Image (cartoon, rainbow, N blue to C red):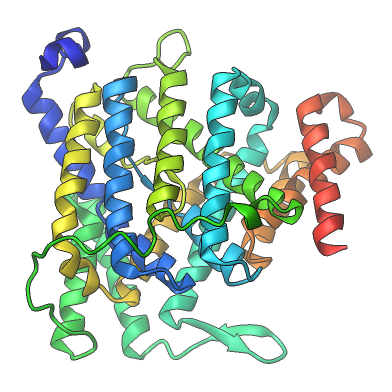
Length: 431
């Protein structure tokens, strides 16, 4: 049956290899079941419900990718998008988390429409590589800023906005320890590096009396009722929310495209420059976002950590299905997630931010017409505390710089149209 569904022999793999690859992928991704509830709970969402929503959304997304697209790519609620959900849409702009969930839902629907209408290639190809890379790096900077704040390493300050906090207090020290443990574990190829570091720091917090040990590590999954189908569709359809929906959609689209390209190339699955079952893969990703929003979590997206499973030999959707099964089993370990403090997850977020910033090295810094818009985007995302505003300034500056420098031929109609729309959005929101 497995051979018929996943075509294991044709891909040069076995059930044992796919299972081991799925376990490896889960171990590298499992940090999200600790981090995502901690991030979204700051909006007022129920921590236990978000934990279950995170696990189920990851499982469903991975199942769809595995059975439908037959690709070795696992899904879960994505970093960066959950930060945008919490810190920008809810905490900065003042919208309710119910409205934010509805925006996530509509961004997923828009993603489905784009995938079905075959305009995804136009959208992906229309955006210059420099902007794609700067957006990824900017989100990395945004995550780093959030993590440093969460740990108390950066604090509010009158006159200069922020300053360094007391770095020798317990939380900053544990955040730094978590980050350095992850780096060391990754360097020495320790399985489940991120999750292991989080658990070590959490246990140290218990030993020093800063957080408490749960009564048991295994328990029935918390109720999903506090977040299930709690979307405020009416508020999300107000004109002011369209830019937020677009931001969710835009980041999810390019995050997914980049992950699919990276993972499939690593596994030798790309043929003639094309990703197999790309349409199905994009539908799996967008469908998972819609389902995740109904359950009560931010955008569910393809995880680049799937490359760890591919490195172990995973070549088919069976790897993703195994990962999904493990996410379902994880719902019974909610007490474990509840004992993880914010300073532990801050260390993990810092590590993820490092991974996202590598794209800066791929920029042509000798070309000022490329470098300047990249720098503006990279700096604007964390400093405006908004992915949407950073993307807006990036597109507008890229278009203006190319026009001013007489290199308008390098602009395509897609960039011009998007820049015009985002300029109107900038005037509407901040005018």
